[in-house]
Amino acid sequence: MNEPPLGFILVDTARLYRARIDCAFEQSGVGLTAGEARTLAYVNLYPAHRQSALAVKMNVEPMTLVGFLDRLEALGAIVRETDPADRRAKIVRLTEAATPYLERISSAAATARIEALDGFSTEEQATFRRLLERMRASLVRCKEGT
Image (cartoon, rainbow, N blue to C red; front, side, top):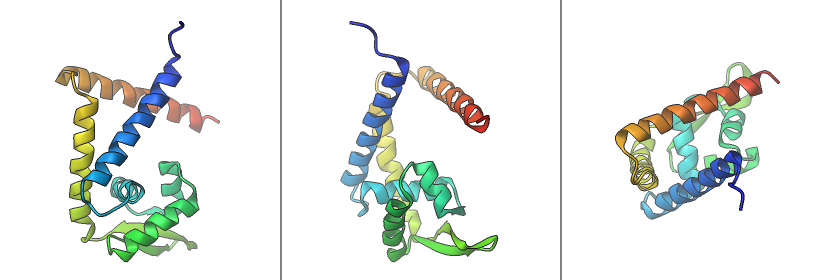
């Protein structure tokens, strides 16, 4: 049998990794769904972004993201503010109430990461990260060129 293409391995590994992280979020007792936990993590990574930009970064439909944001806002973990540059758009910001959620999310993600990298030396992990970052940068340049 032929060796699977790199793209297949990369996409399948990403799918499995996301499923493991989602499971870790659900098992963490954080009190959020995997989608809500992922949303909060993205808001933390990309502070003060528009809802539409977050949906693109998360690769989810805007209406799906709205549901997650509604729940997080009801919990007091985020606020949505009118974008001064476009009154129709909303900027998403974390509140202090997000901190305990983010701590549990980070811990759950670390557990999944440790499991995924089991058997990799510290040097291999660093090399793997650098290579993925280079690949991502190449793909970003390709996308920007279109």
